[in-house]
Length: 500
Image (cartoon, rainbow, N blue to C red):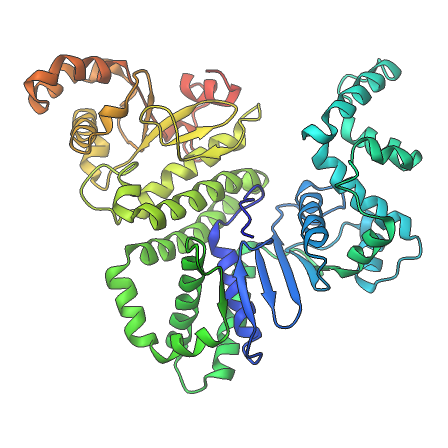
């Protein structure tokens, strides 16, 4: 069963594909082995028994047992175990070590030393409770607990209800059943058997994402050189990329969810022709490679400019955007998907679109309210991005530098684009259009919409079109970016405050 959970994704598809590639090459000697992406975990490996892998990146220097990314992964792993009764293993890979406060807890877990089994059994139940109090199964009981807790602690201004509930359940473990229904909870003995299958792969000290990616690439290409000696470093890199592209195909192929080790032989045999064909004919492959390189550079830039603390929130948004964007390019074609954001005839300017998503991540990192999840599809009007707890926008960019620098050229490009591609037919009016621009597109006095529409539009649609284009609010990303941030910009302030 394929997973659609991208809640904690940071690097989008790329890092998952890289892990999958490494794992497939690593089990090459097992004839019937296979690896799948988004099959009950980020990566699922089978070479006799299943191994389910989830990768988690942190901007902090360590992680604790209470962090949401870990509890959410335990929740997912638990349900996979409950459904499949697998005897395989579950692995959580992180780029940071255990926090000192939880070092003994996790170290003993990895050593399978469960001197107090109930501590680990209850921890799994805690991970389930964290999720189910937000679902219909446990929501009513949680609301009743919050009312009771408020009455008992009237002086607390910002009570931590979930933490308080967990503390309560540790004192009164029989109350777990109020939040976890009978069809959710398995026996304590079964939970302990599940715990024994879970392990944590952590470094001794924090490793940044860039170094993690580089190490994994090198290890993958080294294994390829062992199994297929005599090729150049460039050829091993191309083979790795071809394997990753084959995994990408499985994410949208409804008939094949996995790659078998035998597929490596065919990829290696045809790698010279395949890589040339891929980059000549498949713009998607080139786009993914460009995105991969740019995101690594972007993360390094933000760190150098002093924005390390904002990285996790920024990359959460960019990761959600790029995953849905890559899915859209694969599902609907590069040209159709990219034309939603890119004004102009060429679909190949992926990095221009990535700048739009970066801007959304950066303003999200500064927001004072929870703006919700990111959606790119099934939106109102001509919007092409939406924050579920805020509002939608229509992001636009262009490969033409001159258009970005002049209000009249930019608004002309926008009008031509929306009329030519018939985007205006979906408009409802009043949408906010956000441009990647170097001019004052947000100043309506500089726009001459009526005359531009008159020149471009067909006569019978002129008046209606003018009304639509006048109703749109035109903004740019410059003031919301971290490196060019303008805290006094009204649009930036409303975005940060979550005001409609």
